[in-house]
Image (cartoon, rainbow, N blue to C red):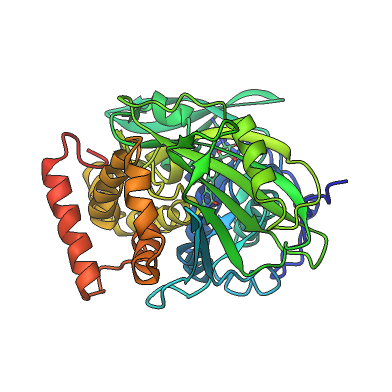
Length: 439
Ligand SMILES: Cc1cc2nc3c(=O)[nH]c(=O)nc-3n(C[C@H](O)[C@H](O)[C@H](O)COP(=O)(O)OP(=O)(O)OC[C@H]3O[C@@H](n4cnc5c(N)ncnc54)[C@H](O)[C@@H]3O)c2cc1C
């Protein structure tokens, strides 16, 4: 039987969700955060810590699952520090880097050392999202579960009220600022005019859990040569992320594919995932078939417009803040949550986020997302992956460069040749973009 995904009490507060008394839907909030994924909960925690009256709202009842690879990059580890949860990962898996496989070769590549911590982790989203949410509540955010934001009332582009539906019926919450963190589909974002453009690369991905004798491994497995059950090479990648547990823990296994409107990925992900799990079964000491298989789309690389208005901002997946080269977005969700609160504090003097929020997203992610999604678009061309991958995987130097670039672990402060070349690529790419990120 598959071990269950446990939710441990938050080590800072000792709390689990059942300790948190449910709040009634209030009539007003300074900052209303819609969605309690890592983006929304991080935003709520930062806003509450900054002294705002915060309401955090989610349609789901927690703890809840979220389709994900559960992988935490060094960027995500850095965000936990910003939240004051620096020691959250002390008793979780410590991941030193990526074990890259393909075309008969393997490279172990350490995370680069630099501004970000030199390690990552992997924690099931049932547990991870719960920890951040509980932390937000401990900091003073009022959490409403099982309440869906369905509409808004507006004047001059400003949100006056958010309309919420729960088991008690509809209610209206008057707001000063709204942070929209409602994920990939972003129904509230759509109601506010957010549009997702699929002419640049987006992802489709599926994940599952398997029992394994190697769940306490220190490497994330990443297979750049992904083949379907018929042996055909697919424009995608496979992953194996160890979730911890000596001898009898779980792995998150998954497959992801890149697509564009021009080259959509018409693949049945479930059989590909099952085949992939069999393929890596011996190597990863997998002790059973994949279970809890789910899949989802991933808007990537800031391929959305309409991310802000005078008193509202979209963050995380709602703003397509997902890395086009590896599909990670937990870190960007948390980062954008922090940046949104910084903007709210900054603009209390001149309160209009419309242009500033778009500018902030462009400033932080524009160049990297533009270059990355262009490269991701190239990888959707069938021959591109073997042409680049077969020779590339044999070079340790090249693969460490790939991990640094693919993980977007280059910072504006980095002044080495690779960093400068990547920024130049970003500038050129943005200049020739029909639609640059977030615009
Ligand atoms: C298969 C797959 C694998 C992935 N693997 C990784 C990985 O290994 N590492 C990584 O970093 N990223 C990964 N990602 C991406 C990652 O899952 C997302 O980037 C991340 O969850 C974004 O967080 P978020 O807070 O923006 O949104 P979410 O985590 O999606 O949270 C949104 C929340 O909003 C709530 N909500 C939605 N609508 C409403 C509404 N109207 N009213 C109230 N609440 C609402 C939802 O219930 C949900 O709790 C993966 C994605 C997929 C699909």
